Image (cartoon, rainbow, N blue to C red; front, top):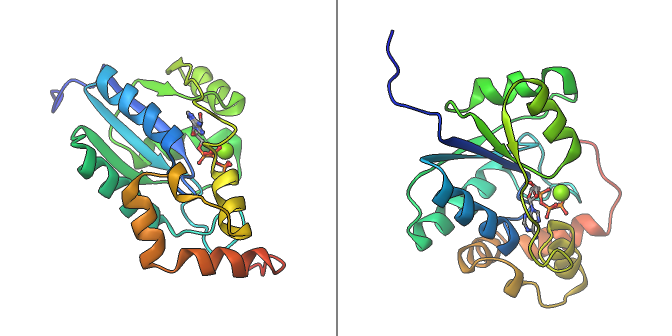
Length: 180
Ligand code: ATP
Ligand code: MG
């Protein structure tokens, strides 16, 4: 059985993208230049409508897909990956859901260790303007009515408007997690 294609220069980036922001896009642009193909894994895919994870995997998929389209980036796959809450099998879960890759870009210590132990090449993923470009900061600003749209790509701001995401986050912010 031959290879369908070479994949030795194919990479994985994984995040929750709640929502996709300009820091994520800096990394995606850089990795897409350095790789033949990039898989963008949408982590914690099964969660939505909570404070930490307000958007569904489908909404996050659209945010990423529309932004890639707007920027003309064509070598990325987008794959939602559910959390299993068991570190020991998480790598196999990711691998089973994604096209083949050999390299992982992450600065999360657990992600780095788990993929390194499984034999993947792990590379640093520098943080850009982290005080502003963070999902937590975007959600905080949305909730408190501050200007958040400059922190995210235009297509993301449009999708959040379309799905009434501001009201969703404000409502979630005012209540206990409901555990649904
Ligand atoms: P949250 O605050 O909701 O955890 P986050 O900004 O940390 O959001 P995640 O969705 O958790 O983003 O995705 C984490 C991935 O995104 C990591 O690999 C991390 O390196 C990358 N990342 C997050 N913020 C930045 C940034 N400002 N610059 C570069 N990469 C970033
Ligand atoms: Mg994070």
